[in-house]
Image (tube, rainbow, N blue to C red):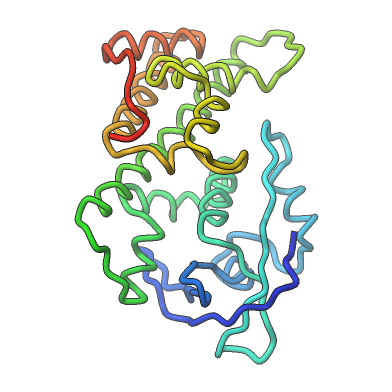
Length: 253
């Protein structure tokens, strides 16, 4: 949903591997990418409405994705432009990658082990206060990569082993619930309550680096168990947990 509030934004060039894009930073220090940039780098078709784009991104998808446009006024143009927050852009890249968008695939490949947030901070000259913050960002990006890989493996498993489900979404929620139960002893919903975070926020953005590394390893092993041993997704996660011999872990470490 587009917000009516118009914010002032600074602009600088952000180099992402083979691309150089105009990065935006609003008055609060939050980062964005303008909608016209998405067209310029061949990520989305030109002249599409917000609803058309959401329809494109959500076709054949298990979970709904909403583009969160905001209005930003920059020195580049007298009129405010639509822009999307950086986190929203990362999800957009993942959706387009899974739909076979070549440019999105190239961008995601280039970002493996990096963070867009980190690149934007470098471009705007904002330094991290601690070295471990950079390590956290690197590990968080790795868990995002393996999250999508594991999701694709779950999708492939149920295409090869179809079953009639009253609630098809459980095909995806159950393996990740098994992961949370195995590592933390609680499902995602309960973890949100304990960490006091909103329904639409990601639990993993609030985990410590050690917990993120454990999640990343479990997801990699579970993906391999599904792809190479045809294990049911929930069983693949449980097998990965057993192999790693992780029973419980603090939310913050």
